[in-house]
Each structure stands twice: as C-alpha cells, then as structure tokens.
Amino acid sequence: MTTHFGHREAAPEHAAAEPPAVVPQTDPIDDLRVHEHDTEENAAASTVQDMVRNLVMSRLDPVVTARTSEADLKTVLDRMVSEAANEHKLLLNSEEQHAASRDLMNDIVGLGPLEPLLHDDRNTDILVNGAGQIFVEQHGILQLTEIKFRSDAQVMHVAQRIATSVGRRVDRASPMLDARLPDGSRVNVVFPPASVDGPCISIRKFSRDAIGFEQMIVHDSMSPPLAKFLEIVTRCRLNIMISGGTGSGKTTLLAAMSSYIDRRERVITIEDSAELRLQLPHKVRLETRLPSIEGTGEITQRDLVRNALRMRPDRIIVGEVRGAEAFDMLQAMNTGHKGSMSTVHANSPRDALTRIENMVLMATANLPSRAILSQIVGSLQLVVQVERMRDGARRVTEISEIVGLQGDVVTMATLFAYKYEGESDNGLLRGTFAPSGIRPGFLPLIAYYGLSDALMETLA
Image 1 (tube, rainbow, N blue to C red):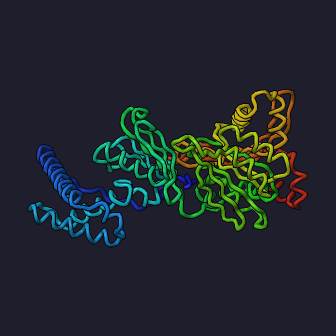
Image 2: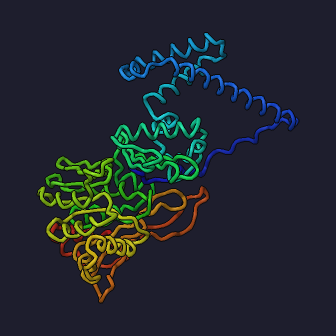
C-alpha cells in the first residue's frame, strides 16, 4: 500500500431528485438541551468503560496473557468485563461491554485505537498527531477521524510495541524510528523532544491486491495509449526512473510496470523497507538494516546494490534512491543490467536528474559535474513523473526521454504530458494525456524487440 492510484467516487450525474424534507420547527434551546444530554450520556458511558478497562487490566496476569491464544483471550476478556461491571454495579449494556472488551483486546495484542483504521482498506495513510488527532487519507484526501488515544502515554506505548516487534527501541533518548508492520505497512515514529506537540506516528498502508494498469485507467491515472507505451518500454528493457512527491504513487506504478517483465528474468529488488510486491517467479528481495544500539550491523542500500551485482541479476530495481547508492545504481544500469528501474523524490523530470546528480556527488565528491551528467545520460532513457493532484487523484503527468548532453546541460524530450482542461461539477479535474508525437531516440532498441510500430501508435 502501497499508496494507491485513484480518486474520490464521482456522484451520479442523473440522480433522481428527492422531495425536500419537511423540517419541523423546534426551539433552539430545546435542541441545545438534547445535544447536551447526548454529550453527557456519551461522556458517562466512556467514563464507565474506562473504569471497567482499568479494573480488568489490574487483574490480568501479563505472563498468562502472553501465553494465551487470541481466541481464548477474547473469551476471557468478555467474561472479565461482564464480571467487573456487575461486581461494581456499573451500567453497561451488551454493546458497550463488547466495545470495552474489543478495546482491551486491541490494547493487549494490537495497536490500540489504530486497529479498526488498519483494517479499513479505504485508508492508505494513518497519521497520529499526539493523542487527540488521528487523520486518515482516503482516495488522496486527508480527513480527521473521531478516534483518539486516551493519552500521549498510550501513543508512546503503541509506538514502543511496534519498535519491540522489530528489535528496535524508541524513547526520548532515541526519538525516531522507521519500522514495518507484519502486513508490510511502513511506520515512522517521532517522540518528544523532537516532536514538540506530543508523539507522532505515521503509517503508510499498502493495498493487499496488486494494482494494475487497468485500474489506473479506470481511475484516470493514465490513458490507454500511455499505459501501452509504459508496457512496451518495460518489456524492451529501458532503464526508467519514476519521479514524484511523497504519496504520489511512485511505488504503486513501479509495481504495476514490473508485471510486464519477462518471467524468465532474474530480478533483484533493493529497498529501505520491503514493500514492493512483484508478481514474478524469480525475484530476490533485499532490505537495508539500521545499526544496532551499539552502532554495528548496518546494511545500507549502497552495500546491497554492490552485492546485487554479484548475484547474476537481469534487472535491478531500487525502491527509492535517496543517497550515495545512486552512483552504484547508475553504474549497474550502464554495465549491462538493462531494464533496471527506481524511484526518486522530485517535482519534475529535470529536477529528478538534478537530485540524482547531487546524490552521486555524495558518493564521490571529486567527480566532475560533466562526468556525472555523462553517466546519467548513458544510463537512463526515461523519466516518468507522477503527481497527487488537488482532487486527490494520482496521475502520470509527464514522460520525458533523456536525449543527450549539450555542454553541461542534459537535453530532454517530452513524449507525454497531462494537459489540464478544467474541473467537473463534482470537483474532479478534467484533462488529457497528450502525446507529443516526437520520434524517440531509443526507437532502434524498441525495433530490436519488434515493437516499434506499436510504440509509434501510442505516440500518434
């Protein structure tokens, strides 16, 4: 979850008009009293549930709880909640008792109030800003939920449980953490004092189902000709960089393109956090490792790229280049590993090349700028730009070919560009994925695979 491509559901254009509802005239003071009464009842119920929770937690044996299966633990909690409510004459109906038991279960074996959000497939991001604010992203739009933590201490407890599950620590002395949940979701944690207003947790969820070009076309993320173009250049083993901002759908697009890789090829993936779900029979997944508390055992992306060259890869896919490994990635692309792909954070195809140049300088500061640019031009053929637009949809906004080097400037040619045409009544953007009609310089390579005519049709 990956992030996925898509947008908000459009409202039907010809929905049947409903007759206007008759609104009875009421006294605003009476309405206010009813609202206050409901609020007081909800607060009272919440307080009683907290009392029951504290009673049950005080009676649980942590050692026995750790050894109990989830099914048995649920039965035990249901019984203990009922007993505690009856014993102290606390008024809870059956629904409230089940809610208290479920919350206890989430606290003990899950991630507390985040559990229902994690199980909602509509959520692609879950963002905790202290105890009182939890946002989710659905269809590219952020919205505040009604769910809250009881306190900052509970947020810290959930974060520390995540850290413990991956053999790490997070506390005030070590306030930042990157981790991965068992389902593959990516987690970032920031504790005070680095986080001023309380502990923060950011979870990037990934779709359980692979998203292909068909769904992207339906969601207006690309056009059929553009999809066919990306399919052809992937099959023909062009070296491709996917560029975009955070949450723009880079990883999702990379995974979709990888489905067109020849099944006979050996593909090695390199990631900070293994999230790519490639539907390939012969793949090797490599993942970085942070140093231990003692400062030993670190495995960087650069280490993995270098090691991958010794593993007889046909293609190397780097989930995201963000440092000195960019130099080794370019070396791999330029030494026979055609069809390699990666992603980079950048706002445009040209910005992507500038970022790669700067990252190469991190690896070898004494290399002249022209030599680095020559390496980039000799290694990459295409930059695919993706963007999460203001209507929440993630779209391919530009595809640029790297043509050559004139002096100290890389020349590029735009092959596809998204042309904004306006906004529909339901708030969705309207536009076209317009081909430029330019004849690409890599056409002889496409002809080698017998697909030059098919490619030119997509650019017509």
